[in-house]
Image (tube, rainbow, N blue to C red; front, side, top):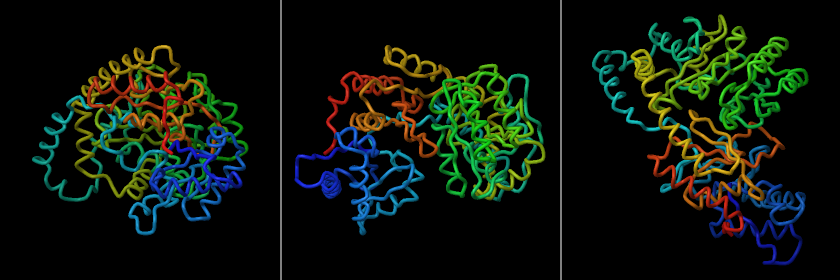
Length: 472
């Protein structure tokens, strides 16, 4: 999202016309390039001292001129010219699906906008395992995956294990990563038009994916301890959802972890209203908090999802889902339909990584590196308000007044640091404002880059918006 502001002194006439003309001029000179997201109407109105109605009329005017596209809940995006190849990349559907991130990250930027597992040299071990697979099972690599070996299921059972609890062998479905696992579960439990519950901020690529296949998002309130049971009950009574997407531990992006009594309350409400649950434990699997999973409390209606992307290697695309009784086969078929099928090489690689103990060893090294980087966050951001966890690769930073989330994200971009504003995580049209950004700390190549990026961000915060010269 851009932090562009119009110069209202540059012309005469009605304010909304002047704003619209300024937008058109900025698009013409490239200050607002194709694909960029205009500031939210409420933010722009505040920044330039006009009413939201004035900005709304201006945006409607440039939309009528064919310069931008508008999507409810996702924002307003600049369209490309008719002979510009980028136009296809910013159609209204694409704009709604990609969120606030650029579809391709610009070169030369420090990437704090992703949480893939830190590179700790895992490629060496992966190389050895891939070579062994190719040498030992050439016919399986040359063909489609038509069966699921018992080892693949056992690997998933071990990876999803939590304390003394582990899912049943026959409940496991290997998947092409955690995201595909969630979409497969959604496809089995819901039909087009059905409602799915999301927190106001969450891993919003799931909500975008479910919208693409015709499901509707409904939002539930949360606090520092996660989803509020009373509001979840209200949503269930009023909206009659079929399914809810939850992250009970180390929620993305807030890092909230539900206490046990709240987990039990959510499970009871779901049972009372016949709502299925998807429990995404990608980050929670690394926190070792000792709390029972919702899947333990409500195994008859909870899909537990986990994978290797955040703690071992994102490029492996290894994931598993533990399903309620009698639903594993349906999820397996749905996963094949929505993903195109599970590649043998990746599934076998993920299984061998887990069963050999290599995945756990890599996770320990990744965790050590994340802990060292989180300590740097605490040092450099001392005195600021933020949520973090020593084993989780991101920070949820509260911006001091008068910074706005989108404005700070754009200012960071100008400092060659890519971060995510809060809009990236909104699962629907939410009126809630958090004035926060998420900063991922796992992807910079080394700790020196982590320090460089965090230092630039701290300097921005200290200098305030007045020190940031927005594009005009």
